[in-house]
Image (cartoon, rainbow, N blue to C red):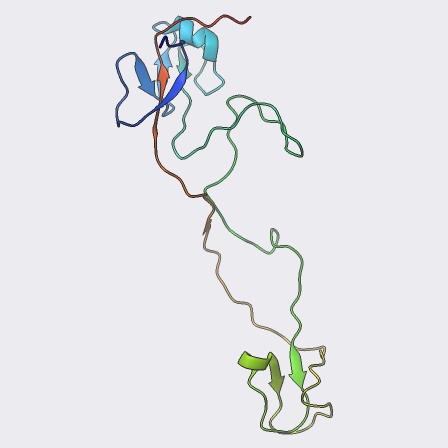
Length: 171
C-alpha cells in the first residue's frame, strides 16, 4: 500500500513507525518539512514562519469537515467539546419540584414510599391523602459543583501521520 504524505492511520502498537509521527500536536520545523507544511499549513497550530503543528488527537475523536443535518458547520483543525462539565444554575434547565403535604393531624405517611409528608400536630385542614401542593414551602438544595465526566466509552488507539509519501493531487 502506498502512503500519501499527511495520511493519518491507526496502529495497534505504541510507537510511530519510521517515516511517521504520532498525532500528538508536536511542532515541526517548516524548513525540514516543506511538503507536509504545504498540505497542513497552520490549521493545527504553529506560528507559520518557523513551525507548524501536527494534529493532536490525544483525548479527542475525529469528525468530518462540513456539517450534517441539524449540526453546526465545523472546519478542519477546529477543536470543540469537553471531557467534563459542571452543571450550574445558569446551565441547568428551568424546572421546579412540587412538595406534596398531607395536612391533617395524624400519624403521618412515610414520604419515602408515598411522596407525601404528613403533619403530626394539627393545624391543617385538608384530607391527609389528598397530596395537594401548598405554596410557601422551601426545599433544601443538594449536590455539589463537581465536574461530571462527559465521555463516551472509548478504546485508546495510536494515531500517526505520514511524514513521507506520495504528494496527493488536488484533482
